[in-house]
Length: 540
Image (cartoon, rainbow, N blue to C red; front, side, top):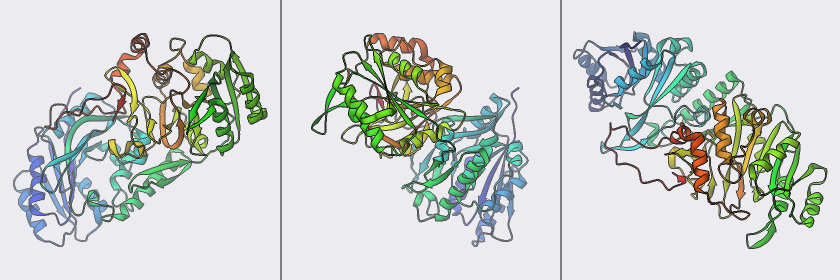
């Protein structure tokens, strides 16, 4: 049933510049949606003109409520005082120097009306620079809990169902500077439905006291964020340590392994040779040696599914390198990547399966532990690593689905690029990961039926990951597990029209919309130019 909920906007105020504060309030007055309540609390600003301005603003509209604290309590205390004044069934957050798009509250109300179980709504946002121009739009993914553990990406505009806000206790003391991150962590742990409005409806002003002005402005905010994330992990049962990345305000939850299950690494091969670093090598021999000599995880078995024409010397060398950790399975039919992987999985004894190309070389020694950590969570079905070309450029950082096609995020770019708001730095959910280096839970692999025989050469991993996600599991990609992938050394990577038709025939709706990749549209509400055209299979 569609209603017109009262939306209470919480805005703590402290020493705000008069013109900026007036603009913030005016952005609320100009809302096309009329059922709102603006709750403003002056946190005992030293500049007494702030309170005088609030008193004057309150006379302009009966929906504006004001209060002044007798002592300065910080943003958490002031925000809680705002909440105490609020009477609406929906709570929205507006900083005292920012602006709402005129349609912001209308879109928020619509989102809460769409489903009765919506508890949290967030929108896209942009920045207002010192010249007053709107810049740097942030086109966000839909709800991505793993990315959220590394980056407070939902931020502005955020709105909550009041009953859940009260249930989790609202803002908490001791989290100043990251009080909103702490709140949204607790909200989303219990939220029945989370909705992302893919429109820029909030304009965040770059000010001298904003975290946007630099790491030096609110250093305490980063400590608060780490504390909030660590407590979040403890509440939901993630065993791990919250580690801040090189870029301040961005984090990683480094999982601790509760158990050390047997990991079966399945490598299809024909024993081919290639040139890497100017030196000829037998690819599978180098791959197996790299895994066994560089990996810090020891409970491994290696299953090599080899073509009948594989040289005998290669098999002998593999036995010498891997010893009793090696299992050899002969493949007597024409090349079929899916079938070879399925054969290897059928003989695997491990609870975790890793599908690995033979043109791989380990970079991070703890890559197995890193992937295993994610699969400890019952709703994670698969996890993948970042793969680099020989020259260090990114080959794979997760699958992206767009306009009916599947591709790689930021293919061929610097793996430390800060595009897409630091996406490549963060553990995050993705539409899929490449089977060149994919870890899967054995029970999930069996549940979805393994790799499809329809895709002998290409798209087998795209199809598999679509099945995993359709079964209700998350798929994670991590930059903290890295391997070299000397792609195209061993086989022709070209895609045929028949393969494209087959994958679209099975998964076209999913290939048209990737929940974890925002296609950079503005929904007709804003004046940004359209983004540059996307390459056919590599997306920024």
